[in-house]
Length: 239
Image (cartoon, rainbow, N blue to C red; front, side):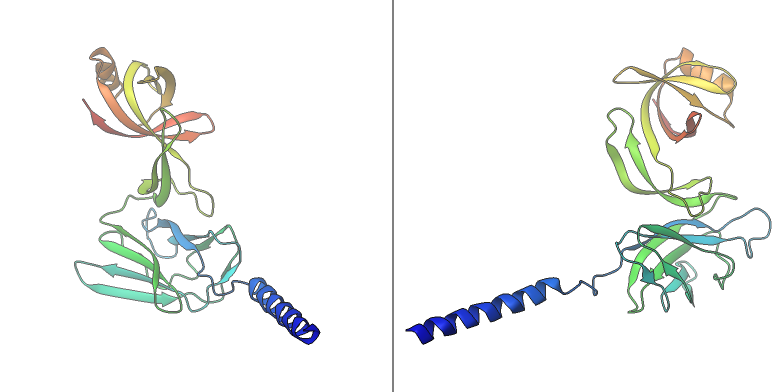
């Protein structure tokens, strides 16, 4: 009986040892979490050597990008170009810009799908744009509902002023009316909760904004948060 108990204890100790070893094995094979967060395909003037692609590593470990690929495909023309990423590493929770020295082919300005492909040949990130805006970055952004601060959209792509190697700005979705407008700023009443917010703007006729104010037109707008306040990105709709 004593020998049996001893054998049981030995088996228990061995099982606990094996279990501990299994639990302590690092998850080295966990798939890297690499995202495309912004591209800059249409700089002013000649595009060559000025374009770039921004990646973000959302994981907790650095990733060696040797033998990863960037591909661009024109769906209408059914043409694909690939180039390998060499001698680059992206740190954990960090951005990496693949710039003129690493991009071997000019990025197309329209009808283009850009993919990030891992060494196994799997596409882990993909974006498409039908056209581009000069001197703008095509950016992955969050859109926040200004009424309550909730996330209205977690992964939306829009053309914005470039933020190379930095966190993209958050954008705010607002619905309401213009109370007043001058040549640079209009006061926007978010409905509800009847919150007045100054919005800076450019390239929009001030008279048009005053007409919206006089007619009490309900607008849906998109604005970005800047150091000096909120800037109008675009008017989405009117009613």
